[in-house]
Amino acid sequence: MAYYIKTDKLQDNVFIPVRLSDQIIKGTLAHTIEYLIDNKIDISVFKRKIKNDVVGRPAYSPRLLLKLVLFAYANGIISSRRIQALAKENLVAMALAENTVPDFTSIASLSRGWKKR
Image (cartoon, helix red, strand yellow):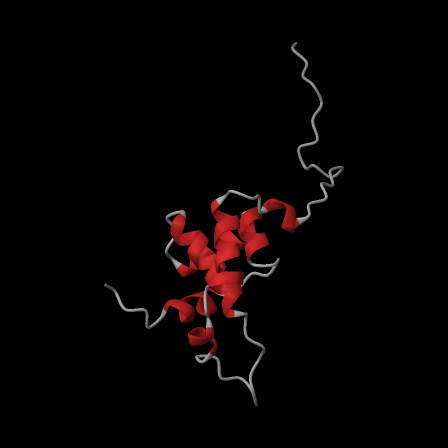
Protein backbone atom coordinates (compact mmCIF):
# COMPACT_ATOMS: atom_id res chain seq x y z
CA MET A 1 0.00 0.00 0.00
CA ALA A 2 1.28 3.46 -0.86
CA TYR A 3 2.12 5.91 1.86
CA TYR A 4 2.12 9.71 1.65
CA ILE A 5 3.82 12.65 3.26
CA LYS A 6 1.97 13.80 6.34
CA THR A 7 0.39 17.20 5.90
CA ASP A 8 -1.25 19.68 8.22
CA LYS A 9 -4.60 19.96 6.45
CA LEU A 10 -6.06 22.22 9.12
CA GLN A 11 -2.89 24.33 9.23
CA ASP A 12 -3.12 24.63 12.99
CA ASN A 13 0.62 25.22 13.35
CA VAL A 14 1.02 28.11 10.91
CA PHE A 15 1.31 31.76 11.81
CA ILE A 16 2.40 34.17 9.12
CA PRO A 17 2.90 37.72 10.35
CA VAL A 18 1.88 40.26 7.73
CA ARG A 19 2.38 43.99 7.84
CA LEU A 20 -0.38 45.35 5.61
CA SER A 21 1.47 48.55 4.77
CA ASP A 22 4.21 46.42 3.17
CA GLN A 23 1.67 45.02 0.71
CA ILE A 24 1.44 48.34 -1.15
CA ILE A 25 4.54 48.24 -3.31
CA LYS A 26 5.88 51.29 -5.15
CA GLY A 27 5.08 51.25 -8.84
CA THR A 28 1.90 49.23 -8.47
CA LEU A 29 -1.66 50.30 -9.11
CA ALA A 30 -2.41 50.18 -5.38
CA HIS A 31 0.48 52.53 -4.60
CA THR A 32 -0.66 54.94 -7.32
CA ILE A 33 -4.24 54.95 -5.99
CA GLU A 34 -3.05 55.51 -2.43
CA TYR A 35 -0.66 58.29 -3.44
CA LEU A 36 -3.24 60.13 -5.58
CA ILE A 37 -6.01 59.99 -3.00
CA ASP A 38 -3.77 60.86 -0.05
CA ASN A 39 -1.86 63.66 -1.78
CA LYS A 40 -3.47 64.95 -4.96
CA ILE A 41 -7.26 64.59 -4.95
CA ASP A 42 -9.60 66.95 -3.11
CA ILE A 43 -12.19 64.74 -1.44
CA SER A 44 -14.15 67.50 0.28
CA VAL A 45 -17.14 66.77 -1.97
CA PHE A 46 -17.38 63.32 -0.36
CA LYS A 47 -17.00 64.71 3.15
CA ARG A 48 -20.03 66.96 2.65
CA LYS A 49 -22.24 63.89 2.23
CA ILE A 50 -21.48 62.64 5.76
CA LYS A 51 -23.89 64.00 8.34
CA ASN A 52 -23.27 62.22 11.63
CA ASP A 53 -22.00 65.10 13.74
CA VAL A 54 -24.73 64.81 16.38
CA VAL A 55 -26.03 61.25 16.18
CA GLY A 56 -25.13 58.06 14.39
CA ARG A 57 -22.21 55.72 14.28
CA PRO A 58 -18.80 56.90 13.09
CA ALA A 59 -18.47 56.86 9.32
CA TYR A 60 -15.73 55.27 7.28
CA SER A 61 -13.28 57.81 5.93
CA PRO A 62 -14.16 58.81 2.35
CA ARG A 63 -10.45 58.44 1.53
CA LEU A 64 -10.49 54.83 2.65
CA LEU A 65 -13.68 54.01 0.73
CA LEU A 66 -12.47 55.76 -2.41
CA LYS A 67 -9.18 53.85 -2.37
CA LEU A 68 -11.00 50.55 -1.97
CA VAL A 69 -13.60 51.29 -4.65
CA LEU A 70 -11.07 52.51 -7.20
CA PHE A 71 -8.86 49.48 -6.61
CA ALA A 72 -11.86 47.16 -7.00
CA TYR A 73 -13.12 48.92 -10.13
CA ALA A 74 -9.64 48.75 -11.67
CA ASN A 75 -9.73 45.00 -11.09
CA GLY A 76 -13.16 44.57 -12.65
CA ILE A 77 -15.14 44.33 -9.43
CA ILE A 78 -18.11 46.70 -9.38
CA SER A 79 -20.58 45.05 -7.00
CA SER A 80 -20.52 46.57 -3.52
CA ARG A 81 -20.96 43.12 -1.98
CA ARG A 82 -18.00 41.79 -3.96
CA ILE A 83 -15.95 44.84 -2.93
CA GLN A 84 -16.76 44.06 0.71
CA ALA A 85 -15.58 40.48 0.15
CA LEU A 86 -12.42 41.83 -1.53
CA ALA A 87 -11.65 43.86 1.59
CA LYS A 88 -11.85 40.64 3.63
CA GLU A 89 -9.89 38.36 1.31
CA ASN A 90 -7.26 40.37 -0.60
CA LEU A 91 -4.15 41.60 1.25
CA VAL A 92 -3.69 44.67 -0.95
CA ALA A 93 -7.36 45.62 -0.53
CA MET A 94 -6.99 45.10 3.23
CA ALA A 95 -4.03 47.48 3.21
CA LEU A 96 -5.93 50.11 1.22
CA ALA A 97 -8.92 49.72 3.55
CA GLU A 98 -6.58 50.07 6.54
CA ASN A 99 -7.60 46.68 7.94
CA THR A 100 -11.29 47.49 8.04
CA VAL A 101 -14.12 45.80 6.17
CA PRO A 102 -16.66 48.43 5.21
CA ASP A 103 -20.21 47.18 4.87
CA PHE A 104 -21.54 46.93 1.33
CA THR A 105 -24.08 49.66 2.08
CA SER A 106 -21.29 52.06 3.04
CA ILE A 107 -19.46 51.19 -0.16
CA ALA A 108 -22.59 51.65 -2.26
CA SER A 109 -23.40 54.98 -0.62
CA LEU A 110 -20.07 56.38 -1.81
CA SER A 111 -20.85 55.80 -5.46
CA ARG A 112 -24.57 56.51 -5.21
CA GLY A 113 -25.26 59.68 -7.10
CA TRP A 114 -22.23 59.44 -9.39
CA LYS A 115 -23.43 60.47 -12.80
CA LYS A 116 -22.88 58.08 -15.65
CA ARG A 117 -21.17 59.84 -18.53
